[in-house]
Image 1 (spheres, helix red, strand yellow):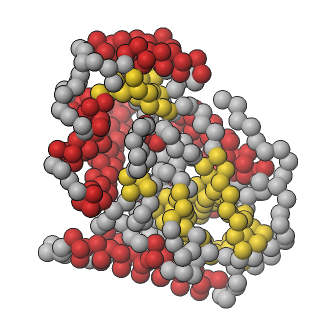
Image 2 (cartoon, rainbow, N blue to C red; image 1 turned 90 degrees about the vertical axis):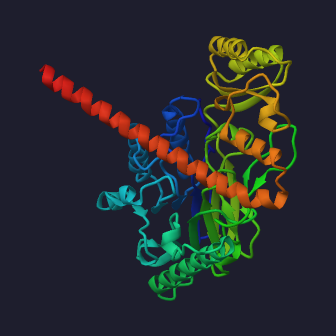
Image 3 (cartoon, helix red, strand yellow; image 1 turned 135 degrees about the vertical axis):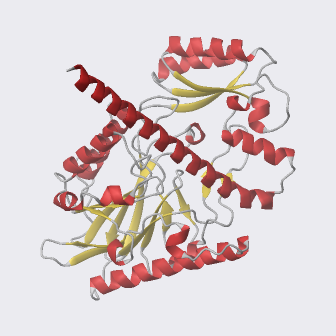
Length: 442
């Protein structure tokens, strides 16, 4: 796909203006429906370089989850380091990177001497190692950043076996708040009284943020509830902006100060098919902030289609004509029929249309409205579908859903990470075995 860039260079408000581009959750190396998306990520990173140049960006801030796994593939690493090399040739003064829950902080920080050559700062694990000061050519501070990475329970609180859920949630919130207070003090110390904008980053759930959108034809969505999340109040009121990652849906968070999730720049799963994907430009004129969302063009369409067999076949054919290479999930809403025939027919149509069929799901099981449907196996529905069905079957209240949903999402995410790491280790062993066989053959 050819992406269009803004023509010309964006003029600055004044000499005191500094521009920051907030992004997160790249998940380099992630596949969807077994589709290798290396080309998609390469297209996005090329577009991002064009935006940096066209809008005269000074600082690129990536708030966690650069990679999709702690053991990224060679292709994913090549994408990342090639991007940093090219970004160093642009107007950027600084790239600031924090580790997310999918990243290995040690892996990201390992080449820090080399990263400094390409003006890239990777946050450490203490408040002092999270401080990054962006300076002008004369060494005067322009911007202060507390680049807080993903924090685990052990990082911010002492675990007690007999803690109640309420006590653990309260301790978690206090621990997060104390960490940001320490980061603020460390940053102020490094600024030595300089009156410049201060940004904090974070990779966590904040209460009230929307983690998933509604299915087509339904209302509402899924919001972060309780326990492993915090109120926006834990950030305090001293920051000029809080740049968040972890939730893939771009959104503002209701708070006393500007707090925002940039969301993922690309659609990472079918659930985010209808989302708008952006990066966020922050323009500081002194301490005055202007926020601008810049929509990211999608190199590959990800979509969910619904209907009976004939309607699904027609929609697959249309998707092939309009968006070759698209990834589709089909929701079957027709009369009961043999699951094997249904999947075979839709799979054949997808192959002929040049699109990728990720799954075929029955509406009844997906929506949790009954136990009858054309497909009976749990292997044929998503973990999210199973979760919803269990909630419906047990008449779980809205209050209980708010508490259970973030726990389910966290458990699911951890399980997916472990599965990806297991596969990565297996691939590495297979590659080593092939190399040994070649050497023996020589």
